Image (cartoon, rainbow, N blue to C red; front, side, top):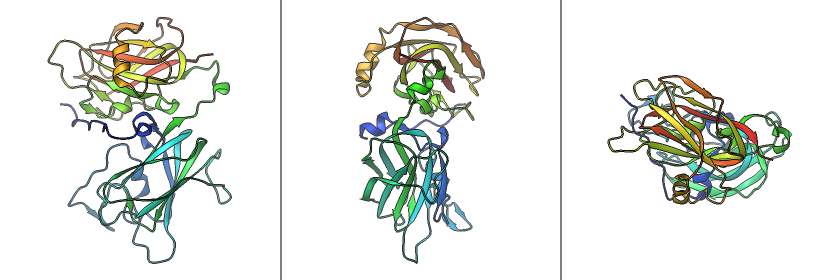
Length: 340
């Protein structure tokens, strides 16, 4: 039996949230380092990848259990804040400050600062405001643009004066040091390197964005899985690579997919530049004519499949993996080098 259906992505959110990588994703390695107060709800919950949920009858020793970060009612001067180490250094394009399910206990306003440090911030760290004081409302997504074009490693979320935030998403572009990585092999599809899913035929189960996450899948819900295909054809997913590069090897992991893994898979790729990322239909249409990177290969259950021989296509920016006819893949790695 498959996991519960995945929530389809919203279509009315801004481009930075649709196309950016969530640098504050716990699944990619982001971590909450500090909170002035998280009496009602532990601050680390705010970085969870899944949507916030509300469980009516769930309570703990401190009161109502809430899915997010929640401080107690402030009875002194000042306000609460939390410090988050991003999964990787990157340029921040915008935020989603999500107050879902916080109705009478949301903060009326927030402000966000950022810093760039080699380890973690200390008392002498210089912080820069990248989101000015902004009003918040009850139980809603607040998509807010960043005012900075710089690279940052940490953010500090201020809430005024107290309350709860269900999720903090920090959307942006992971920083790739072209000079340091030149000539080195890296996973060009990794979310930590800026890879992201931009289109798919179906993503009924699981969490499709986890296809590009580090590590192996935790369970059958931690990957991309399509519904059972009842019509001719096959399923597919398209990825914008984190950087223009030359793919030299492929890894397809079907961890935890045992009775529902794809029978086989193939990959096509092309060099499109960045101009088509916001034009999903154009990318999908063009992908029908992309050259073959990896010919159709048999897959097996719950296993890592490594393919060290691929067709030489030169530099590419996008790839589409086709699965036949349907099923689930936990992780996809596209190993290669940055293009000159």
